[in-house]
Image 1 (cartoon, rainbow, N blue to C red):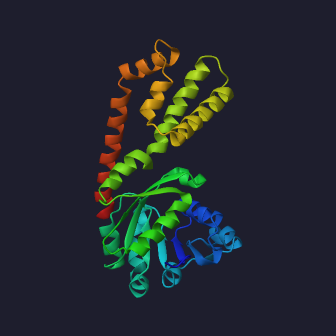
Image 2 (cartoon, rainbow, N blue to C red):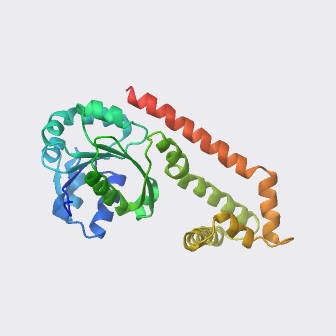
Image 3 (tube, rainbow, N blue to C red):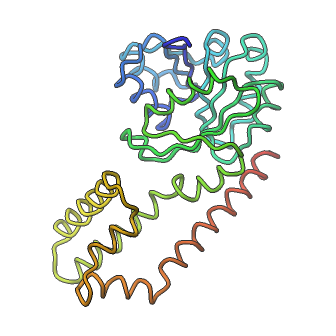
Length: 275
């Protein structure tokens, strides 16, 4: 496997920059990376870091090993259609981080018979703490699969699923998951403030508690359920909070919310695939 395959990012927005930043931080040669964006002024800082930049997507696609499709789902079809001729000549691996659009749709728009990996990222990728789900179509080779994992792992963890339908579940768990935690943090901060803490103190305590709990779960050899049991003393303060959550059906609410997310992901796949 080529140690550093050449890459082209179609779109230079937040997610593309998160992956590029992770790659550079991990020693990936800047000159092996192309960034493509229609507004030249948005590419200057990337050029200053040593990347090759262009406003012409086809210029990059015609000469790289891997193309990362990092544009909004609503414009992916015209972008892919425009790349079809270059893609047919060069046959790079395509990695799509566009939510909801199937590999079959992308393959069709590109002209067919292309190796495509779909990635469901999440926003913590912006701080190299992402949780990414990956799925490859049948045209992806073992070497290309390893290359895709290396690229996406620059933003955090990358886990594979065999069935593309499982990306809907990944959307519900990790793709949309950060917002669930942010909402819970909001609620804790608001409650702490009502109890008399300043917003600043309530915020710092809430964020550090979230960070600490996540780190404990990562480092522990037991599941979160056991960690919760260990900090919930009988007749203690924590038990009262947990009993209140359970009486108000917190677990059922979480499942209902995630099922709604899953259903909307399925709907979007149909809407965007037919666009």
